Length: 498
Image (cartoon, rainbow, N blue to C red; front, side):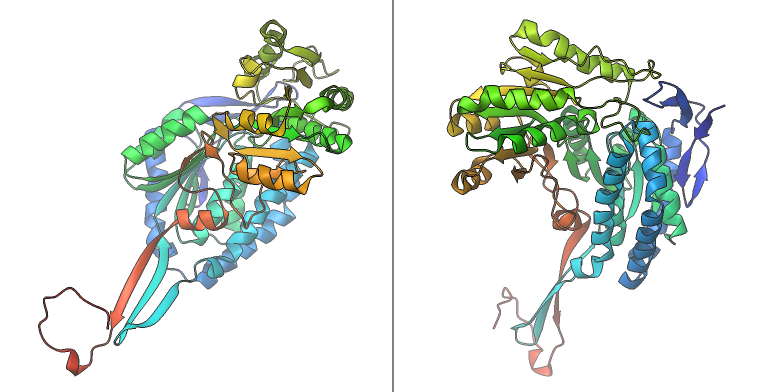
């Protein structure tokens, strides 16, 4: 018998009352693990009401109290990281070691949030005029909604709500309906750490729940991570409702390999970045740009490593790559490989026929490698979000950078080279928000910010880091004068500093 996952509202787990449920599967077996209650608009309203009710007291609480809760939360997360990782692996499918890495990267942002007193320090200028002081400070925006994707069911929520609540906001999280259990555990641990009821709420469901959050008049800001078409619509709809938005979209990350690069290092990086987490990462390397005469040798080294990748269930320590999230997504990804040859690409490694013994009903797909991929090919043009790596050829550095910058996306880009001058040119000239030099997946640490350019970001602020603090707070400037009797009198002129 499967259980039903409800919601987390006002500090407690609550069952759904809409009568609608969705199946949550184990991607390694294809079996149904649980049913997920689909929130009605009224249930979303109750979560927002709980957040709104908790807001005045939490926003008015001392920084000492907030940080005490966050430090306790960090301790609980660290102690329960393996339990959290197992939940991620069971519902997403990624291997256990990868899930542990996800939790660790999420903890980095909790660490950042624990230092919120330093992040919220204001400024004071004294005697800007006679007996006049000016101070600037930052205050919470109010109720914040977060909509997070299936590929990082713990890390991306941890990118958002710890910093938001540290800044004095309250939060309503809508996690992916495909792997919701991690978010529920995150919420229960926050309550155990002492976070007051209503400060963090979780509503599970589908598009209707997201749309209600975007339209709700009490929601002041929306954080989103997902595909580009949805990110664009989230920004449009939320801005129309008067909200501030940070909406991170999709990607087609390129890795440029120059002729002087260490080819073994580059091949290792390409395989790790393309096939880790079955390619279901917005920072996965999707395209390798081989520059000059190294292309054939580089492809051979990548292919050798790709064929050796061990695919299996996430709870098997021997597995290096797990299944995809759903059978439908697996079939969609396989279609790109199956169409590639007809569209002019060379299929070097074809993983579409993979079967994992004992897990024949799982959503598995082997790794695939396509060479000499035309830029008009579907596999190059689309965000595949699966274990498919494209290789394109370029004759020069300039041609490679032009190719990268022509992409509508600008999430991440990397260059592999031993030439410091070329590396410096690349990081200045490439149109991407995150750049790696001999680093294939340049995800910034928690005290910097994560975000792309072009169709990879809609809104002005990246996630976490100082950008996160600015997004979750509003600036205020206070001008103060304690007057002297000599200041009395009527003066209708524009105030002048003196």
